[in-house]
Image (cartoon, rainbow, N blue to C red; front, side, top):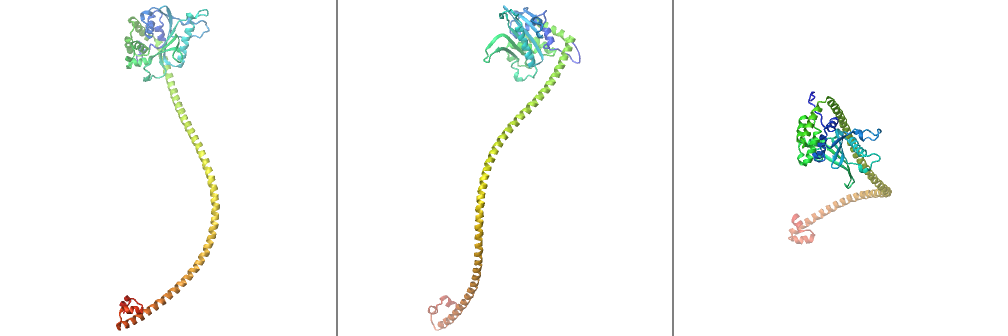
Length: 399
């Protein structure tokens, strides 16, 4: 093993190591064991029946674009053979890699025939991708670590089973194996999950433990472990792996920054959407306000017209009031004169009343004097009252 500041362990999903492991023409049973697990085919049925295909053999013309596949296998199944393409994508499985890997399987399928060959010679092609997605794995996604893709229509009807892509998410597989949760899957699925996790592990102890748990031929397990030990001592491989890790870290940092920028842009876009919605509402409200203002203006015009009429009437009323005031002033002048006359009449009345009161007092005194004389003569008070026209009370009071 290579010792630096810390013990390094190259993941089996690293592309150059992956090619060494499964593209070993001298020991193809490692690839046979992988295929048997993923496709649920008995290992004994394909053991020693696999050939590693040289990429160059499928290029018909020198001008054809060179496609560096990881490991292309030709496997004998029963009476016919299949092409199995193995791909490892340890450093960020994104849309570009999806498109590239899809072009691989298309190229393999179309490159089987020469111009004169009949299409009946075409054989099925299966591509098995061991992927580490560029994005972080969400816990809610862990239930689907393995996905199979076929050509189907919108109703799910399969057009052909000659082309099949199987994606194994090695990060999900690792989380399920390391953190638990693998038990809810079938026995075959558990074996695929452990195999997927094996390609992601970067600790030797975990690698040995996971490999030991995989249901696989013992000789193949031993060979895989021996080869891994050897690959870990390959200085060139370690150097390339470290360089790729650094590049991957730089890309991740860049993608994180891009994600932050995108998140900020999305927030700003969302805010713009809200602002636009708010402006639309405000515009709608302004339209309603304008409509109301037009109604209010129309009402104000009518009110102004009514006010002008009211002003005209008020002017007439003022003119009438001025006339009435003039008449009132005349009436007041007459009232003042009448009041002056009444005051004079009142004074005269009071004077006359005083004279009358004096006369009445004088007459009363005379009657009292006469009443005293009559009373002295023995005339009764009632008789005196009748004769002198004075009350009994006055007779009793003054006589």
